[in-house]
Length: 257
View: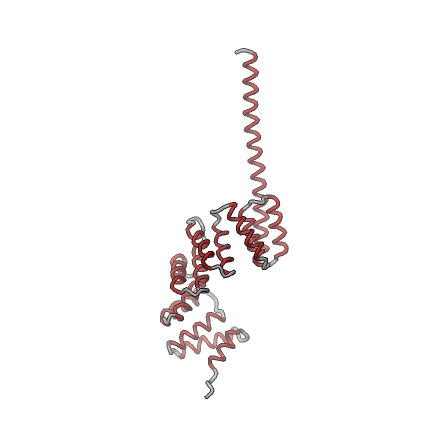
């Protein structure tokens, strides 16, 4: 081997080794940045859940400063802006989250709920359906529940029922879906079905003023005075100052001639 060829081989080898080292360094640096952003998002999410909105905002801003295109950081920041009632910012962050990662089912789920809350029901359903289609997303039951609740704003009870039944197929004890199915059943004149759903609800969840008043209405339709009285006592005893207790008092007041 000539000296020139020997040295050119050494140069080539050093370039390859240098290239591998720089690639490894870049990957390590990127992993470090990603981990740092993820940590800030986890902290921000925790503060958001506890209602500490200012601290949550600080953590999410740190995450986005480190990694502006991190989809989950934009997703959680969008939820925070929604909570703060800055709807334009929330919409922008949701769109950024999905442009960065169009398979982010959490962002699709949250954006669907946001759009529904803003009265854009049909558009919101598209994002709910996209989240449902992601088989790796572990909150399919909750997405179906939210889609059903969204459709009841139209109202579109038959379409809502399909989503709610799917939610219960995935999670038979999902209390929100049981309550909504009891309500839809009563509205559609199916009081027996409504009773079955509300009884399942009480097995899966704690009493609420809304659920107890709904149970009173169902049993009144079915003319079961004992069950009606039992639910009424629970409502008055547990939630005496609630609007539902006031509504119950109005329902129970003797009619004036």
